[in-house]
Image 1 (cartoon, rainbow over the protein chains, first blue to last red):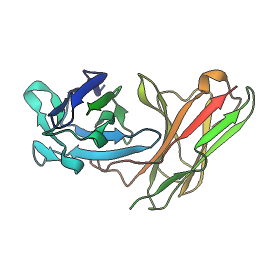
Image 2 (tube, chains in turn green, yellow):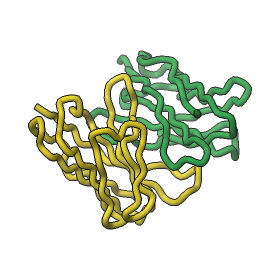
Image 3 (cartoon, rainbow over the protein chains, first blue to last red):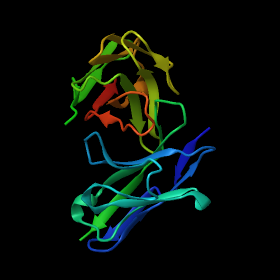
Length: 113
Length: 114
């Protein structure tokens, strides 16, 4: 079964420093991968998606993610954290042939002033 | 922009009650989904529907049922609410069968069962 593992449940960074949120996936085939963000008391918002067109995917709000097949990773990065980035982030895979998504357990990002 | 609207943001019900959670989307999406979200567990799929009157069980369907009488509306039903169904419930919709189609989420319903 295809799944994702988010390696950190909590990440804390200072404002202006880089962000790295780690995600590994398991998949027998070329997967569809997504990152979603959830701000407090809100639904999930799509940050970016990987669809095999390019290994480096740019998303909204300055985030990007790199698909590395050799490492089965899809880590999310941002060069400089902003206070408004504080939220929970989910790495998500759509298993081949399935309409529903499989979610990682989430990483809560704290941004310190 | 796609709009997915959940009828209630907060809901408090009693054990044994029949509970209805409603979700409406305005983009003519074929697929609709119900998830529950619990701390440390991420989102888990309860049920989904890929067409009117069609439904499929997700990963945790026990204690729930769904109804999709119209394309834009997908209802989640707790037949006899129990305290372990206290959770955040999220509805989502997506277009077609393509693997790269993202899901669009509502703001969630925080349900408490007393």
